[in-house]
Length: 69
Image (cartoon, rainbow, N blue to C red; front, side, top):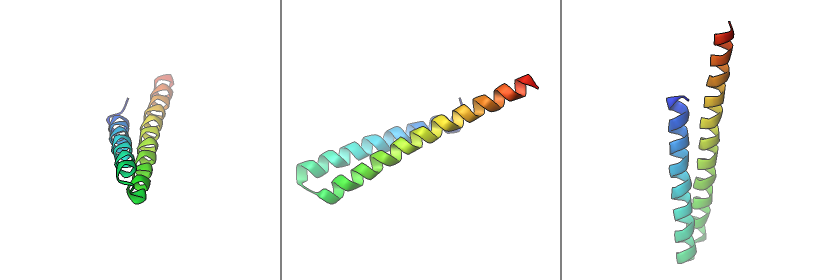
């Protein structure tokens, strides 16, 4: 696991939580813009987490190839 991948997953989790909070606040206040921003933040978080997973998988493949050489 790379530090970079771990960091991306952590940032993604934070963005998802922030997005869910904004969505909830938008629901409570009836503010559709805030709710929409929350949806975007949550989606960005999911992408960051997937990017972190991809980085780790690429690092694992690289390590496997290096061991076989």
